Image (cartoon, rainbow, N blue to C red):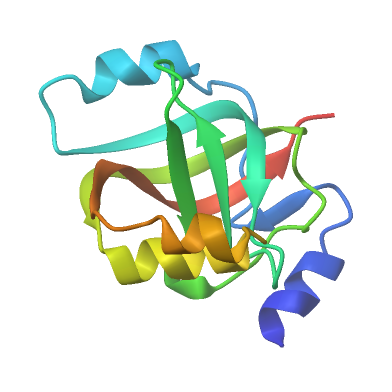
Length: 140
């Protein structure tokens, strides 16, 4: 409930910690920053590719290599609008290498509105870069 209030109290397009868009790294710069590291504190500029359709509790962005990176929100302390897909955003927090279990992948697919067949096709855990954001701002 508090998170939903926070969304409505931030008409300027801010969610979570108030952050500025200036100084954000591109996804290409991010690839270089992550090279050889497991964890990086960073501010990134990207386009939201997908958003949790249940309550906006995660989003996905494309990395420089075309893969999707899941962005979750620190301590589930805030959510983003479910219609954020296609919008340019800046988000700040911690990127890290992670293994996502089959169970979690199926849960995310369900939240994302995937079909029963697409969900059933998930049979392997996924090793990828994940992100925990402290704040998100929609770039006008």
